[in-house]
Amino acid sequence: MAGHYNTLGFGCKLISICLHPTRRPHFTPFLPFHWSSSLNTTQQQTAVHHYQSTNPNLSHRFGCHQSKPSTENPTMESIGVLMPAPMSSYLEQELEKRFNLLKLWTVPQKPQFLKDHSSSIRAVVGNAGNGADAELIEKLPKLEIVASFSVGVDKVDLNKCREKGIRVTNTPDVLTDDVADLAIGLTLAVLRRLCECDRYVRSGQWKKGDYKLTTKFTGKTVGIIGLGRIGKAVAKRAEGFSCPIAYYSRTAKPELKYKYYPSVVELASNCDVLVVACPLTEETRHIVNREVIDALGPKGVLINIGRGPHVDEAELVSALVEGRLGGAGLDVYEKEPEVPEQLFGLENVVLLPHVGSGTVETRNVMADLVVENLEAHFLKKPLLTPVV
Ligand SMILES: O=CC(=O)O
Image 1 (cartoon, rainbow, N blue to C red):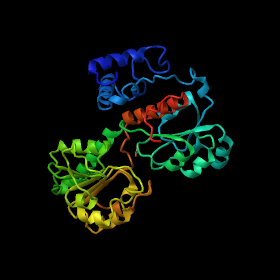
Image 2 (cartoon, protein in one colour):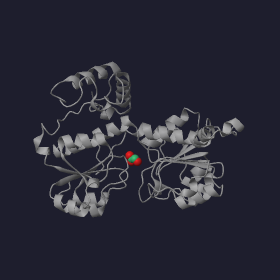
Image 3 (cartoon, rainbow, N blue to C red):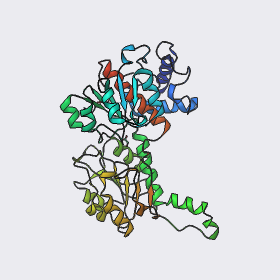
Image 4 (cartoon, rainbow, N blue to C red):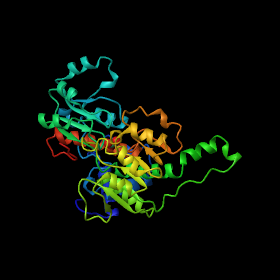
């Protein structure tokens, strides 16, 4: 399976592994286990082939865990895995099969609960909203690994983890397509006023007259902050709309044909749509500030599918309210789930509740990756997607 494979070969191998009675005794025969409820067989095969071809390094695990649940790995049953907040019922179910899952949000006395279980908690499963900060890490002396159900690990105190020898994993690659799709969706929604048009129809206003003209997307210059996995996937999609692509990143990538700008202000001055797609770090906090917003200008559109704190939100709100920025499509905010109410009445703004990777297919594959990182760690095997 390493290297490359053809679609037919992979399909056959997948089915033969899935049906093997001893490999994965606890999932529905004939169907890759977590897709059985949400997708029909053709959709499952299409999704598997797609993930397989776009993530060849992850190919071994989709639809078929190689390792066994706790009934066959009894040593894992006593391992305390702390989940601070709900994130996926499928993930909870898979963790419960293998470990002693402790759901912090369900207990009223959290500090006491943490004290009571501090000697058994060896793993924390966090996400984009709830990670493991220094305070939590200090309360868990037996903590060995933080497995994040997210690609971004800005809510995990990575320095503290390094200092204490705690491993950290995330869920890269598997969510790239969804997040990039959403960036394009937000761009179209803002430029073509899709949400506003929908409201226009629903409220009966169409009967009184046609909706006003909007702005074309095809051919607009798309500037991307951060040309990592997600940034590149956004670029690839925007190329499909004949958009010239420009980018800012710490270093130029001469192997790519896109135009590089050595500063975000220069990038913003030279693009129509500016997409934030970099990880949140101390260097990228407020990377979109007043100067960048002014450079983007009254015709420019900001799309944020990264993290809220990438953007100086107060500056963004005043620029939008004052008409100094053309529009914004936001999936993330500085203090989620709080969203500045001044944005609610603006037709040139589309607001989403942090749903970049929020599809059934992707969240389930992310869950598999979390589980498999934990299993690998406790079986003393190499982590699949290590951060620390
Ligand atoms: O925001 C979502 C993620 O980091 O995966």
